[in-house]
Image (tube, rainbow, N blue to C red):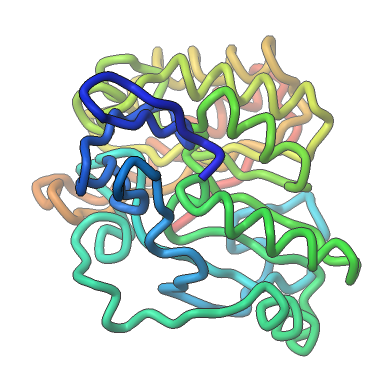
Length: 285
């Protein structure tokens, strides 16, 4: 695999995402997709699909890209974060040897998308970055047929992978989980700065970008955090970038939380609009 380089003690460094896992022989990285087999980093689940649906594009959510169209939504397995509130943990973290999975070729995916009257293919459900090699190959076939490619992502790409992803993805919805380094470290097992840097790269590339912020009571819903998040978007990106504030529910390892209070979502919308954000949406209410 191209996204690798040798490390110490016969380990291989995976450069697919910002974890830069150093994988020893016969072991996997954090996402459980890549295995060091005899000194080669092998994509063990190439072409393996966990979920397929035909969705309104607004469900991604993308409200300002190909509106009122359908998108062919696919997901694989694995994730490069460890979010305690993961809404898709069954395919991202706690799964077996893909007993319910199917394998699909790029040609079959594109054919299905066209037959379903879709204008785009969305990589979603799990983190698409960990399935980058397959996603890229699908995009080569899709582009020839006039289909657009969408990433619904946590934005935790490596320096190398974000460069490649920007060559074939047309639109992104990035989940900016909080504007707090502590939240990312303790709740998501990741680093905020990586996501912010990749958001700036995506915006600077001219690709379509929308951002989702899942608000959790007493975790990332303070007015200061919301203001800091909106200030980053409005000053480092643009007030034209759509922002989706979404409601959280008890799930996975955060069953002790309560569904996000509606007043918190409406306050977030008010704050964003006071900053001059032009496209503010509320989700899951």
